[in-house]
Structures are given as C-alpha cells and as structure tokens.
Image (cartoon, rainbow, N blue to C red; front, side, top):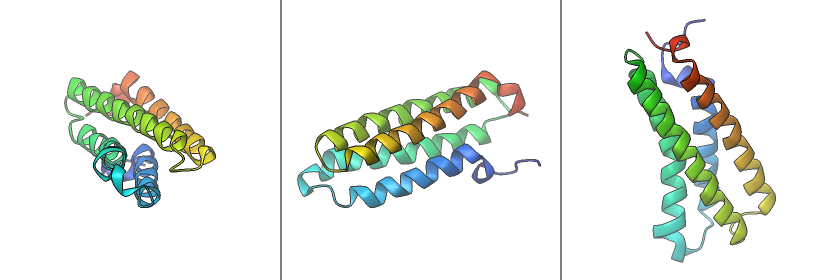
Length: 123
C-alpha cells in the first residue's frame, strides 16, 4: 500500500495519539507550571508530529528528510525528559510516566529506522 499523506504513517499516528494524551494529562498540572512544564511538554510532544509531517513533505530531498526526522527524534527525547520531571514532581503517576516514556522509545526507534533507510521513504 502506498502512503500518500503523513497521517498514514504509523509513527505519526503513534506520536499524535500520545501528544493528545499528554495534552489531557497536563490539564491537571498545577497553575504555577502553566508557563514552564505544561507548555514545554505540550510543545515538544506536538513537535514530534509536526516534524514527521515536515519530513514526509521533504522526502524529495533525502538530507532534508533525515534532518526533520532527527528533529522529531530530538523532540521525542525532550518529551521524555519532561515526562520524567512530571513523574518526579508527582504531577503524573510514575507508572504513567514510565509507560509514556516507553512509547516514546518505540517512536524514536521507528524514526531511527526511517533515518537510517531514507531510500525506502524518499522519492
């Protein structure tokens, strides 16, 4: 099956799903975190999806494609850091933080595979 849009990529769907989950979970963060942890974790989780979408649209240019995937990977790692803070500050259950971090490990793994094999994805 030929993938025609970034929304059809499994990694995009996984990243979008967890970003929406993080949005819901972060609604309960304390007000004093509004301009720090809350904004940061929402921004980085959403940025994973945005960078995957950009990468898909830049697949005519392998170097640009890989660069945007690397950006998505970095944003996923940043989100893992914010999840660690949220868990340690008791804003989320530590078990949730660990599960979400594991999901990002899987996303990062997919991004690395795509980056290492750009010829499978680029035009």
